[in-house]
Each structure stands twice: as structure tokens, then as C-alpha cells.
Image 1 (cartoon, rainbow, N blue to C red):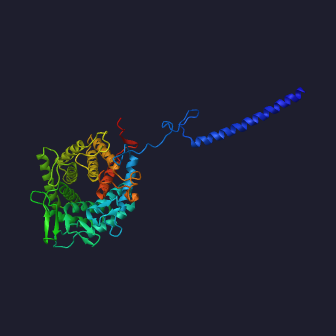
Image 2 (tube, one colour; image 1 turned 180 degrees about the vertical axis):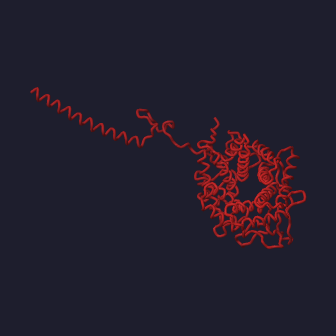
Image 3 (cartoon, helix red, strand yellow; image 1 turned 60 degrees about the vertical axis):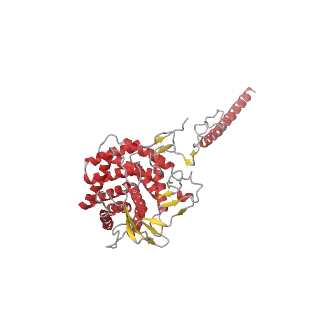
Length: 460
């Protein structure tokens, strides 16, 4: 009897052990499945409420102020994303029949103006080529070459006519006519693009076209060194008229263009015209007490003075004159002092006083990246201040860019994504706004660290 009891006890123990093993295996399996679906920061045995935001990791809610999607955190990855979205936006702005580019995209109605512009085509190509330098994507170069054919078709090559060598300002799609207007800024910025293409391809047709445009620019200088702004045909009076008001923007563009082409060709006639503009700018700077200079089109502002900085950079590269190098850094410093840096005013943080659009802020950022690069090349020790200013400006630009999160109210959100609207009051997109912003992003991105670059907390 005792023997049977012992056997019975052993049998019971064996059965119990088998139950424990099987049950334990099931518990382990269930535990492993739970680990796959439950975040690591959720602790078992804790009283968890779905309404307690501290218990669940989630995306922060979108923040809008005056219909603007607020950007409080900026990192390199976001800037790279905006480069990609911006380049795709630019591709969508190209007319597929003519390969020219519209100045405006009216995002609210998903519509374009009925003409193409030489300068905005050149500006778009220049931005694509900057991105090409960064990414080496052949599709960028291929489109640039196609659109350059439109530019070349807009050059006046009829000897003996007004504006010979210059580029027509615009092309009307309805009647297929070129606007009888030649602007020195249009020809200058087109020279930028043509010289960049010549550098990349070695094709002499781009250099010859640039030289013909530069030759026309040399005919537009006044005795005091300033440039006539344009020449246009007045159909009402049946004659050609000149724009004689002095534009710092146009004068700066001409100074840059002629400096660039002098560097490539070594032809002194271009240097001589450029030097007269540089000397005029320098006199204005000294007469203003080494401060912002002023033209006849606009009151004192950082955009025009950024053009002075950019043109001084190009002229310094052409001349090697140390005076202009010092003015570059002084005037850039003045521009930096006028940046808005109050974190409590998140709508304007990173913007510049006297600049109210994405085109203006984008252009300033583009120029300051050039100052930053020159600063590093010259071995100066205060270069990070330029990088910091550009990063703050970029945050503001991205805050004023169409994205998936802020474009659902538009007629065609997909077309608008990557475009920078003019400002919070005007939601159209101008091509140069996108191009200048992209040039700023590309010009600084390789100098940026990984991780968070800027974080602006909400005011208490």
C-alpha cells in the first residue's frame, strides 16, 4: 500500500511538472507577442490611462498662428527634405512646350500668368545647377540644358537694332511674341547662368552668348558709373525709352555679371565697367558713414544692400582689392544686426527688418552663405555668426513653405508643395522665392551638424 502511494505521488508530481512547463511556455509566448506591440516605455502593473499624455509617446500637435504652420524645431534632415521638395516644385513650374518658366504660380486658383520670363527661367536654372553640384543628379542638368534653349531664343541677335545682345524680358504665350523690353538685371542674371553652364559643359555657345550680353551691358552705363535700368519700346509714342532711375539691385547684378565674365575671359573692357560701379557703391557707402546705401527705387533696406555685398564679393574675386573685402564683412555685419531674433515673436523670428517676402529673405540667406564661405576661405575666426543667421532665416523660410500639412485648402495641393508663398498675407508663389531659398539651403547644408540645429520653445 505504501509502495502504491509512493508511485501515485511520483505520478502526480510528473504530471504537475509537465503542466508547469507547458503553461510557462505559453506565458513566455504571450509575453513575447506583447513586447512586439507595446512600447518599451509602458510598464506593466502601472495604472495607465489613455487620457494621460505622459503615458503614451505621440507626435506633437500641429501649431498654427494666423494660418501659418509654426516651425519650432529645425534640423539638417528637414532642410534636405525641403531641397528635394523645392527642386520638384521648380520642375512643375516649367512650361513643357517652351521650357521657359512662369514668374508667378497662383496657388489659391491653381493657375499661371500667360507669359514666361527670361530672368525667372535663368534663376530657376541657376538653382537647379546649384543642386546638381550637390547631388550630381543628371536629370537636373538635362532640364537645365533644355530650359537654356529657351533663354538663348530670347536673346536679340539682330545687329544694328536696339538691345542687340540683350535678352528680351518676357514671352507672351497667347500671341507668341517677345516683350520689347530689355532690362539690365535680366541680362546680368542670365550671364550668371550661362557662365555656370559653360563651366559645367565647356560648350562655347554659352560663353559666346554671355559675352554678347555683357557687351550690351557696357553700352548702358552712365558717366557717373551708374547703369540705366532698361530700354523698352513705347508703342504709343512709337519710340524706345530708357529707365534712368538708379536701382541698387540692377547695378549690383551688373557688377556681379561683369566681374564674373572678366574672371572667365580676362577682357579688360568688362573689368573697367565693373570697377566704375564698384567705386560708385563704395562712395555711397562712405558717404552714408559706412552704413546701408540707398538707390532711387527703394528706401534703405537689407535686400538691396545684400546685392551690394554679393557684387562686392564678385568684384573682390576679380580685383583682389582688400578694401572691398573689408566692406563685404562690415556690410554683412550690418545686415546681421537687422535680423529679428525675438523668440516670443515666432511668426517673424529669423526675418530681417525691411524685408517682408520669401524672395527677399531667401536672397539675403543666399548672400550670407556666400559671405560665410568667403569668411572661411579667408581664415577669419567669426564665421559661425553667418551660419547662425542663415539657419534662423531658413527656419522662417520653411515656415512660409507649402507642405502636405498646410496646403489642403488649395485647389491643387500637390502642385504647390515645396513652393514658398510670398508672405502670410499673399499666398501666391514667385519662382525666385523658391530659387533663392534653395540656393541658401544648398550653400550652407554641408557646414551644418547632424541633429537639432534650432529649437524655439513656446512662451510660458
